Image: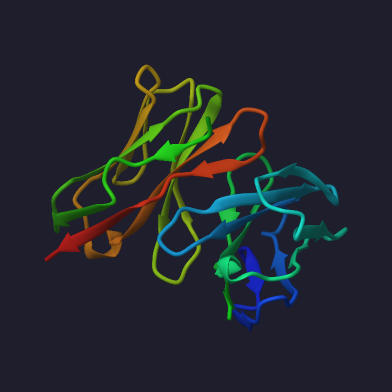
Amino acid sequence: DAGVTQSPTHLIKTRGQQVTLRCSPKSGHDTVSWYQQALGQGPQFIFQYYEEEERQRGNFPDRFSGHQFPNYSSELNVNALLLGDSALYLCASSLQSEQFFGPGTRLTVL
Amino acid sequence: GESVGLHLPTLSVQEGDNSIINCAYSNSASDYFIWYKQESGKGPQFIIDIRSNMDKRQGQRVTVLLNKTVKHLSLQIAATQPGDSAVYFCAENILGAQKLVFGQGTRLTINP
C-alpha cells in the first residue's frame, strides 16, 4: 500500500510564474490537506479538501488555490509566484483524525 | 489565538539517555494533539497522539504527557538512539477547525 505521494519532488520557477503541485492520498483516505513549510519553520496550514470542496482555509491569499478530484487526489496551484513562496509544500491525507504526510515538493522561486 | 510554541529550539542528548521535548499551546479548544518527527528531506512522520480527555499515553519508547491546566505537552523518548535524531513538532487540532497548527520544532541531536 503506497503512502501519500507528491509530484514533482523539486521545482524551480521565476517570479510571476504559476505552479501546480500534485498529491495522491493514501489508499482509503478521502481528505487532503496542504501545508507550506518555510525553512526552519513548522508547517503552516493552507487548506483542506473533502468531497471535492474546500472545507477549511488558512491565512493564505487567493493566489493559492486547489482542487480535489473524484479519486481524492488533489492539486495545489499558486499564481503570480513571489520569492517568499519558496518552501516545502506538504500534502497530508486522512480518513478521520490522523494525518499522514507525503515527502513534499520543494519549490524554489528565483 | 492559535499558536503552538516550543520551549527549546535544539536539544542534545547522549545515546541511551532519555529525551524530553516540551511544547506549549494556547488554544483551549484544541481536542487532539500530535507529535511528529521530521527527518531531513522528508515529510513529518506521525509518532504518537493524545486526546484532550487524556493526560498520558504511551507508545513504543515514547510517552506523551498532556497538562491542560498549564496548556503544556511533552514527548518523552526513552533510551534514545542515533535514528532518533530529527526535528520534532507538536501540533494541535482545534475542535471544529479541521486543521493542524504546528509549532516551530525542536531539533534533537543524539551524541555517541
